[in-house]
Image 1: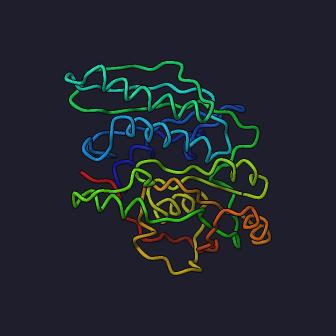
Image 2: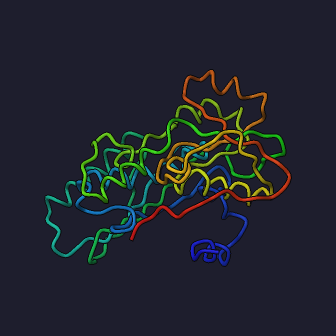
Length: 269
């Protein structure tokens, strides 16, 4: 068990286990976005850093079929940061918040050696999409294309340029698909740790296993920070979901025998 899983196991309660904690019709979620863990300053502008930190947090709300309402931002700022650079950060936060009709209502700032950001999103849903609910015979699938984030991260490690439109810099969220197709889905989560790592989370929480129905290259299943959707549904719903027009790739069937898929941590030091 890695340290993250160990820590979560020590904090376990009835609210922990999904992308956010559901209390009545409100959902509370928080993620950190830390320099030298999730990004390096030389890879992205401060505006892009702020944008992505907000996107990956709003992704948790969307993954649960929730509408983001409010955000709280805590940020550690280096002592030598300029007011112009702070303006870039705040513009990045505000632009994405406005795009998703999410109001920034407060937070905290502290001095530090690097930029570390933690954002709490308060969202609302009348029918949350959870991780529990899979049954034997259900299908697992993912939206869109996977692999770009890992490919571009590898390019950055080699000091090679990547496009400003790269999903590593600005992930694409599947809000419309989730909001419109929720009634056909049994479970869902966003892909942040890689397809197989996140599939293992679903299998563990449902005490089930998965049989792969498609050959998937390691460059795809180990690509983290994609923020595409990993979804589970009954076989009878496949054609309906495909009819939406978003690329959907079924890759596994749920089985009774508990197993895990090959999983590698995607973060860097």
